[in-house]
Length: 143
Image (cartoon, rainbow, N blue to C red):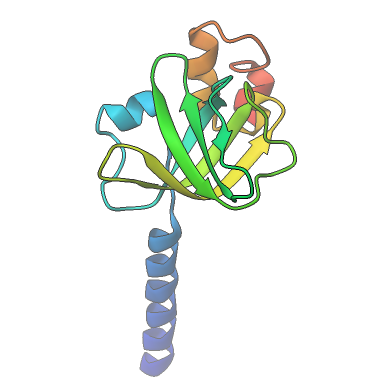
């Protein structure tokens, strides 16, 4: 019985440790610039892709764009193929980490044509700042 309890405790401990390591948080550019994002740890940056901000050298996979919450913006670098739904002026979630120069190095980019994909906190913040669309609606916050 003691051996079974020890095994269960070990399994629960390992599961909790794995969960803690994989837990990623969502932050807006304003929150990141205010120092609320974890230093030296991966997190998710949410906001809108600023219109006119996307730059890519011809023949290269590396892309640079700005993510904004209509209050602050951050430069994001991503090396890879962007999702089909990625568009300037649309919602985006970038997973990655803050760099020493204050930019964000993304390892994954997720996009959708509206703010319904965004974390409710980011969508609500955009709605408060007058961004049109479903952000901040009861339906968005419930998703």
